[in-house]
Every structure is written in C-alpha cells, then in structure tokens.
Image 1 (cartoon, rainbow, N blue to C red):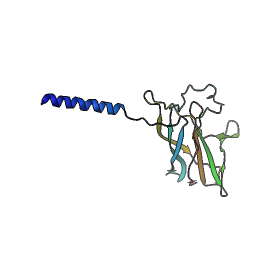
Image 2 (cartoon, rainbow, N blue to C red; image 1 turned 60 degrees about the horizontal axis):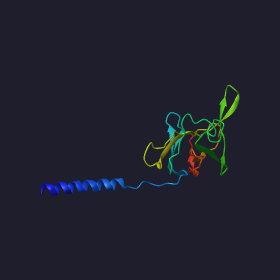
Image 3 (cartoon, rainbow, N blue to C red; image 1 turned 135 degrees about the vertical axis):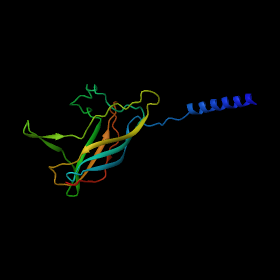
Length: 181
C-alpha cells in the first residue's frame, strides 16, 4: 500500500513538472506596440492649477529590445541624432476648435531667449536577462502640462516608442485634457 502511494506521488510530481515545463510563452511581433490606457491629471492643491499629469500606456515587444543604456550615445543614439530619445511625445493645444502641435517655450535668462522644451525622454533597457525575450508592461510618464504662455485650456498628447533596432511603434493619442490655469 505504501509502495503504491509512493509511486502515485512520484507519477503526479513528474506529470506536474512536465506540465509546468510546457507552458506557453506569449508571442508578440518584434515591432513594439503600445495602447493608450489613461491620462491622470494632477492638481496642485496649493495653487489650484493642473501643473502635471501622468500618461499611462501599455506596451508589448516580441524580441524585448526596448530601452537604452546610459552609454548608448553613439550614432544613431547620439545627442543630436533622431534616435537619442526612445519615447517621443508631441504636445497639442486646441486652438479655435482645432488641435495644433505647438512648442513649449521656457525663458533662458543666460541667452535672453526662449528655449524650446521637449516631452521626449529616454527609458532604460527593459530586456529580460533570461528566458523568453517577449515583454509586456505598463509605462507611467509624468508630464508637466501647465503652460503659462498659452491662453488655451484643452490639450492632447501623441506618443510612440522606438526600440534598439529603430523600429517605431504605433502612435497613441490621449483624450482631451482640460487644464485649470
């Protein structure tokens, strides 16, 4: 009786191990894909102004080549190159019923001129160290949305990401964002 119980237990352990080793990994295209999830407006309680917001979107990538190391600064990832940033964000204001891409300007006291700011950024390498290289996850990117030089209160953002093979994802667009100024 004990011998049969031991055999059944060993058989169950072997079957369980085989079933776990056969689990399916998710499969995604090698070109990254993103999906807009939300934009969370953050109100500064002291000023009553919506100064910041959080862009939330999901991503998938089949070969996991998303992100850049700090040392990734040679061509094509050099500072003045088209691929220095791997998260590209465009800013739009609704002006007289139409969304228009506008630059965000900040006064530079050293040069006595306005400088153009960017919402673009570099995110770190997301590649898994072992196992299946296909990845998925969620980005939360905090953006400053207060523009004291603008008279318009409705904005939108468009965004896409770029992997290390220079594949561009699809572009997402936020819903209308109403700022309190």
